Length: 366
Ligand code: M6R
Image (cartoon, rainbow, N blue to C red; front, side, top):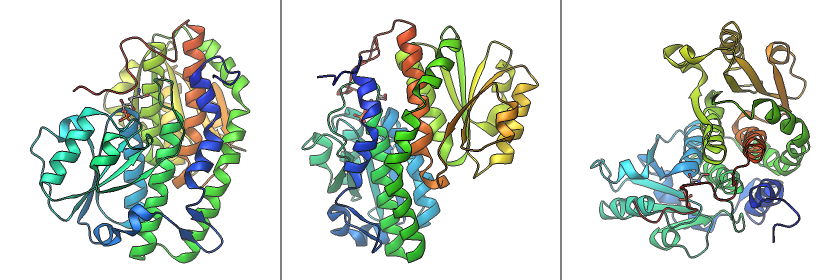
């Protein structure tokens, strides 16, 4: 059942090239710049005329929501707010009939996310569900939706659910951007062609598994770990930290790199590994200077960089190279080595990676 893998989590990490392909297959036609998503098409007016898009989710799905915030605002110019479902449901939020609420959930059974839907529906908002489990409560309670088609995810730590959620949300953003005219046809086609190249690039990331395992062996005893990223890769830093803490029980925090100076930099000493996502686009120079600040305080840098990078490679203690990709789609790639890193560290520490202590696969009580 684990298909020859030692754990479901590893199997699911390795399934990602196929899972991502399954997610966009039948929806994406790069040649003619078409994205087919019936759930969106039937309600396109709601999306096009929405004052705001609200996103509610928990855990890893919330991180996918944060990535989506960057993508939607960038491509569609519709304002987006991302909420923890547990906070949203209880804080008497402002919701109107001109809002669209997107809920994201692998299981489709998360109690707080389900409650967020009920609240939004009562206030007249349109609710769109992005779920993995077909026929789940969240899928049924939403007005419309799109499945991720990731296949069953057994490991408690979410891996392929995350990357397929980002895939669906990216397609949605592109479809809305095309409908609103906020991106050109040429740009749309370029993104779709890039999307079709993602599975091979994820495959390439999986081929550096042994190198990541080696880095894991050096830091398996670390009591703490920081994850930093900026822009599209800030939520990836949060997700990297969550993955490490939930399966290896190492205390980890994710931060937007520039926030370091506002407090967390006080934690840096020679004992502190800092994982930095330093892709060439976006805020590269700024991330380089963030890395220098950490190095001058003797922190250990594990940098995720794009192929051919020289600047960060010179100053980092360890470098993990991932294939070149447009910034918008980069979370689909930069996430992979972070999943592998947590996995190996957890295994080396003798942890039960598929069923970490105190955790359940779906949180059906609040
Ligand atoms: O099934 P959902 O996507 O609604 O679950 C949300 C979270 O409980 C889930 O993502 C959790 O954070 C994972 N264990 C993370 O790996």
